[in-house]
Length: 411
Image (cartoon, rainbow, N blue to C red; front, side):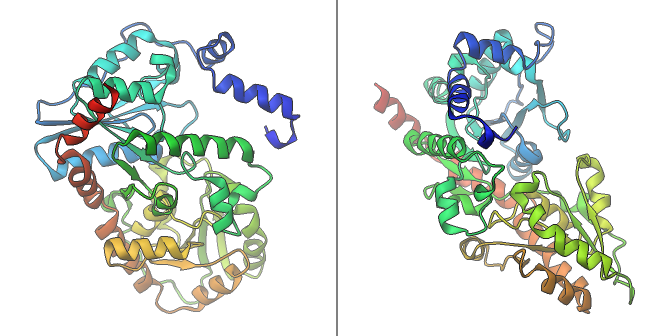
């Protein structure tokens, strides 16, 4: 549904319902999300008996929650880390320590209370994407749920993933290609939600993290917690130099075509494919388990052309030995260099310059060496170790002064 085509009064009504989850209509809308599993059949999170017990919840976008949890445990034997995620029908089936059916998450007060008690047994809870970890408990208020955890002595932090805290007006001002300018995006609601989430995180006074460096423009007090991928899972061990005369194998994997700029680049790709310069595959609806093989067959992966940043898919393809092409802002490149000491190995291109870039790559004799720089970058920045250190040193291992300050401010 393109909300830009709806009358303003209908859009206003939709937003009122979304913003009033405990109203009669809001409760009815929640029931449409599904019946809960049989009472007591969905467990709550359990931790090992360790000095630090960390819960990361509730979205696990692109499998990041579980990746960060495992990275924390690998870094520090005194940490037991678990992730919990809402099981979305028709999703990409990323594994999680605890997958909760969407009907249970929204409509099972018993599970919500049990999960809150389990989280209260943690020492730290990282709330992802400003979504409530315990469904509709406490009026589905993220602020109320975070405050309840703090009152139980749990150290709470927030982690922004992307559109949840990327302010459209700021993004448009800094990026002439911004996907928020696309007719498919309903801008008023996107602006409202991002502004609300930014205010929630900022006003909370809690530690904050972002998974992509561009989000530091929206949450400048946050720290960059890099997305994590398993280099061994994605490694394409049999990769060899491209035989002379073979077309350049190019792939593009848009989760949301409008956001990635897919319609803007397709004419160029069709042109180069008709010339025989490239072989092109559009990857959509492919389960996560099948993606390593898809990237292993490619020379070049086209990433994002409207966001000004890079994300999990680019890191996965880089780990597989693909040369990555995309549009990345100078600010993101500067942040990566300042934080890591390494240049971001993404070949810069816009929809207008993409044809020239692909022609250059097709003629380049050193694709393997370019790809090798990407593989090394992933091992240094995105294999989970850096993310784990950021979370531990910037939050988990910090003193308890933040909790004392938070309690005093509410008393």
